[in-house]
Amino acid sequence: MTILRTLVAGCSLAVVAAAAGSEAQAQTAADLFDRSTLQEIRLRVNSRDLQQLRDHYQENTYYQADFQWRNMRVRNVGIRSRGGASRNPVKPMFRVDFNRYTSGQQFLGLKSLVLDNAWQDGSFVAESTAMAFFERMGQASSRESFCRLYINDVYSGVYVIVESVDSGYVTRTLNEKGGYLFSYEYVQPFYGEYLGDDYAPYKRLFQPQTHELEADTILYSPIRDLFKEVNHEDDSVWRDRVEQFLDINRLVTHVAIETFLAENDGFLGANGMNNFYLYRPADSTRHRLFPWDKDNTFVNPLFDLMTRVDENVIFRRLMAYPDLRALYFQVLEACAQSAAEDNWLETEITRSAAVVAESVRADTLKPFSSEAFDGAVELLQVFARTRSAFVLRELDRLRKQP
Image 1 (spheres, rainbow, N blue to C red):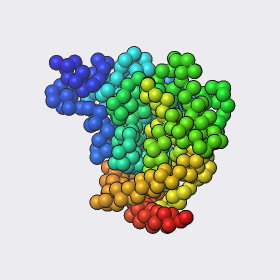
Image 2 (image 1 turned 45 degrees about the vertical axis):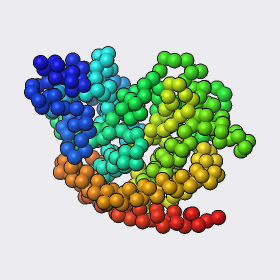
Image 3 (image 1 turned 60 degrees about the vertical axis):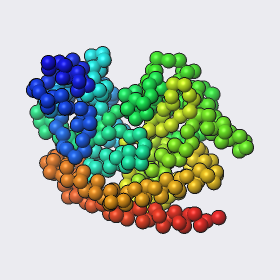
Image 4 (image 1 turned 120 degrees about the vertical axis):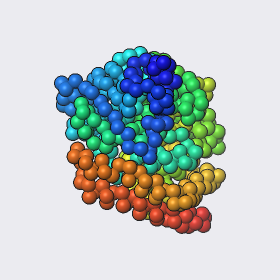
């Protein structure tokens, strides 16, 4: 009977339920990603492996561990250090792969997840609030929640539980299967230039998350052709040709939401494009974006609405079309209205901060003081109270420009 309930919960047979009954049956991914609850996750790792992970935190080496949430345990998962500037040996960020050592193993229907150390987010809630806002605006986004993480029964601080962007994510958000998914890997500033006919430069930037074993011509021809058409000089055919490889309206919408959130490290990032996944359906060459890693949002409530729109080749040319420029403004206006409606944004920030506050203060591994946490939350609240009015004023001004 316990095995049956485990299967109903969407877990593999490797998940051991410590308690039977209706509670085990009720545990789902939705429960794990309940942002109103501070979860508790425990990792058990060989002490020598844990030290190796810390000593070599810049590497992507996997180590075996056991993963436990509530009364459910997954044995022999793979964990590794992950992240860019947030990588560190003191409070590592973890990728947890449930099927790394046991083929087909899942937990609550998930193949993997990320335990984000919030190393660059003094408020601990900016990333999850931004993702919740993408969802509020009708966009696909990762589910996120908060947890106290224990490693070998030692409290290791507050972490953000982040749903991985993978084939299961695509099925959940788009109800599609078999598509081509790529993570964007930041290796150098890139603004959408054409990198030539060879696949190698695109392979460095776009890492396949599905169809990994397929030939480069199948994986990368549509990506190469996307940037080739983006840089085509003939304005008379530019839009028609680019739309074969890019969902233009969705890109404009994505960037408008990032801009409302004052994202400094997204598609129009300060150092070029960053923090997104690229996806195309199996029967199409047309790509779209999924958001990722939003801990550099909310940088300034006076963040200019036209910040770096001219730096990116794609977006600069999109903004030359009056209807797409109008769409950009419409989405920004909708963001401002949605954030202010029932005081949603400030309420979400305040509620989430209250969920983690006590445990954040007890987190001795965080790279800032508890007073800094309080200050960071207050800055987010100021952003929430003032951003919408600023955006609406700026839109009024921009729409009056010739």
